[in-house]
Amino acid sequence: MEEGEIRKSRTWVWALVIIIVLAGVGGGVYFLIKKDKPDNSTDSTSSSKSSVTATAEQWEAGGEIVLANTTSSDTHKISDNLFRMYYMGKGGILYTESSDGIKFGEGVQTGVTEDPGKMISNPSVQKIYDGKWIMIYEEQPQKAPGSNQKTPLGPSTQRNLYRATSADGKTFTKVGLAIDSSKDDNYFASVPELVLLADNSIAIYYVSGGEGIALSVSKDEGKSWDWQGIVFKEGVDPDIVKAKDGKWLMYYSLLDPGENAISKAVSSNGEDWTKVGEVLDSGSDTNAIVDPDIVEISNNNYIMFYGMSESATSTGGDTINLYRATYDGDIFD
Image 1 (tube, rainbow, N blue to C red):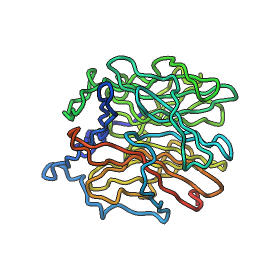
Image 2 (spheres, rainbow, N blue to C red):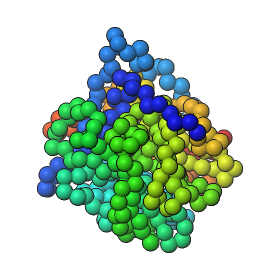
Image 3 (tube, rainbow, N blue to C red):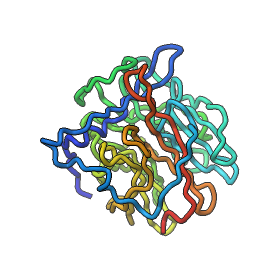
Image 4 (tube, helix red, strand yellow):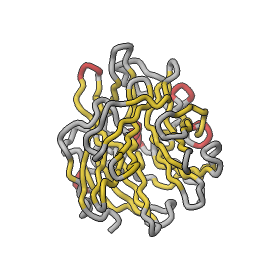
């Protein structure tokens, strides 16, 4: 796979949409959404919502908040009656469990906690074999509550991906740096998605440079990663679903204000992707929908957890809450 060039389009400035802000002691976690559209006089790539192609696969959104003040969950079917969701909570990464994928219990700390002055988020967890799990999560500098200042990408705003390990998928130990974004990602590596490959190596898809989805591969349980380049330039926030027959699906966010939606792409090898179209939008011209997280509940019965912005004027921006959508049917059809 040839190394892709990161596109410097003003349209994808909106792909830096999630600026995570951790409030002080006793406060909550807030997310600020930048709503400014590109200047159409200088950027011809902006388009209206009507230009988005919808697919036959349309998900039905639920109206109730699943978890408040969080997004970018990672949910796994552990057994027929046990589902485990990893998510960003107060002070670090938590997990919560459910017997049906609908009603979840209280959050439990995983042991992956924040260091002073840092913010961690966006966990992706993968069982690599019996008795061994890894977690890749994002770390970035903590910002002041209510801050929505646009800051150029660089060392002062650097987002890296870190690794933690576990023997049971519940209690994790932080190990260290996984992806140094200063090398290939213009100081911005975000929203990781882990996939176990047939040869037991591990693929990681993640937002690189704030503008596209990169792929790296590890053959040593995530200790080191071989950067393969940008494999998809049309969106961010990847969630990968694989079929046993070798078909790959990617659900992702389109963050351009005129096209914001959860969309879908397909691949036969995990490297070359073809867009399919939109499967879910926010139903609003002002709220943003992000971070798809799909889990199969039973045969051809799926739940998608996703983040959607809500008004939060006291913070100077918006809070993102976690919602649920459902789909009954064969997503690989």
